[in-house]
Amino acid sequence: MISTPITEMTTRAQDIFRIVVETYLDNGAPVGSRTISKAPGLELSPASIRNVMQDLEEYGLLAAPHTSAGRIPTEIGLRLFVDGMMQTAQPSQKEREAIESQINDQGPIEEALSATTAILSGLSACAGLVMVPKREPLLKQFSFVKLSEGQGLAILVGQDGGVENRVLDLPIGISESALVEASNYLTAQFAGMTLTDALMRLDRDVQVGRLAIDKASEDLVQRGLAIWSKDSSSRPVLIVRGQANLLEDSALADIDRIRQLLDELEGKEEIARLLDNARDADAAKIFIGAENKLFSLSGSSVIAAPYKDGDGKVVGVVGVIGPTRLNYARVVPMVDFTAQTISKLLIK
Image 1 (tube, rainbow, N blue to C red):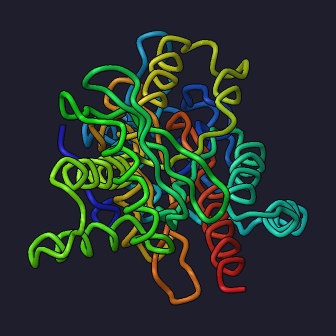
Image 2: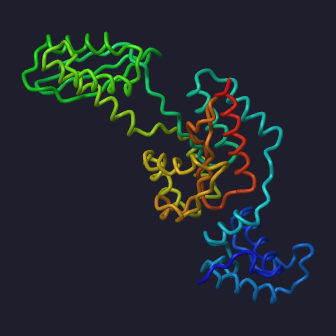
Image 3: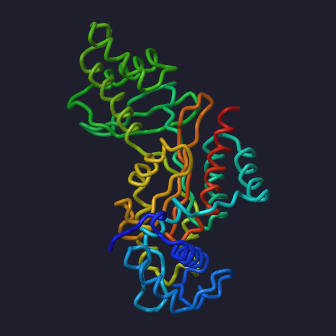
C-alpha cells in the first residue's frame, strides 16, 4: 500500500477520488462505480471507474468494506483530501449570528466559552470542546483546617469570590496555633498575588531568612502554596459539550466505536494535551483518526483552532470532535470563525 500525492494522480483519478470522498462524507455509505458514473461531466463507464478505484485502493487512498463492493476513503485518503482538494464553505449568516450571540450575550468569559461550545456542537453535530485559559486566581484569604492527625484541609478564597479546597498532609504533631499562624501569614503576605508569584516571593523570603514565623508554620506555608501551584499547572481546564450528538442514528451502526470515543472523552487531560498541539497553528488544525494515538481505537477526528487575548497571545483552543466522516469543508471554517469571535471578545 503506497500513498501518492495529488500532483501524481491523473485528472481522471482526482475526479473519481473527490467524488468518492465527498459522497461518503455526505451519506456515510460506500460509493460504487455506478454512483460515480452518474456524476455530471465525468463520462466514464463503470468498468473504467472500477479500474481507477482499484488503483486508488492500491495507493492506500480508498478501501473496500467487506460488506459492500463500494469504496470509502481511508484516513490517509481523508488527509490527502482535506490538505489538497477540499473547498471550504464559509459559515452562513445564520450560523455566524448564532455563534456571535452565544459569545456576546453571556457574562463571565467561562460562561461565554461554555455556551459557545454548546452552540458549536449543535451546528456541527459533533461534541464541542474548548480549552479555557489557565488563569491563576488572585489570593484573598488562605486558611488551614486540621482534619485528623497528619491530614488537613487547605482553603483558598480568591478575590473573585471563588472558594476551593485541597487535602494535604500535615506534619505529625503540628499545633493549632501553627495552623493559625501559617494561615495569617499567607493571607497577610500574599493577598492580591497569583500563586506563582507568591511561590517565587516565598522562595526569596526563605533564602534570605525573612520569614518571621516558626519552623512548623514555615513548612506548612510552603506545603500549602506548593499543593495549589502544582494542582493549577497540571489540571486541564476543559469544557466538553454535546456528547449526545455522537449517538445520533447515523452513528448507531458503529456503536462500539462511538462508545470508545465517549470513553476517550472522559480522559480530559489527554484531550487537553491534544488540543494544546493546535496552539501554534494560524488557523484550524485537523487531526484524523490514528494520526493521534489517543484516537487510534475509535478512529475519530478533531478540528481545533486557537484563540487569543488582547495582547495577541494564544490563551486557549476551541474545536469539535466526532467520527472521521465529518463535513470538513463546512466545520473547519466554522471552528475558525468561532475562534476568531472569541478572540474579539477577549480584546474588549
